[in-house]
Length: 156
Image (cartoon, rainbow, N blue to C red; front, side):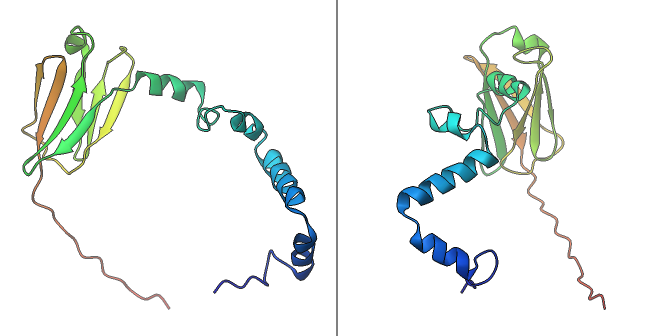
């Protein structure tokens, strides 16, 4: 059980809160929120909550983000990326690590998109095929999961 009689709640604060009316409590909370986050009033007026936290660079990146999907089967990880312009196929570059796919130069030349893969994959054996406006990347899963034990030592 949480010790409610300890910091930050004192006996005086408890009594003053019990004497407050619901409207006074609401005004007090709104005032605190207004002091901590000055833009909160704008967000409460219908603006998107997360748009106020994004920088213009982040907004631009999210606007250019690929509409990709990644899924796994028993043996492979598949990533499907819709290609709106076939010219993208000539300029795009694909790279992958053990858990990420990096797609560079689409939609714009300076863009780079990182897609987190749902499983660990092998270094070799990936293929990419384009058909009907969809680029499909097929990467073999790494089935050999190696575990290492970590010894715990007690420091006196």
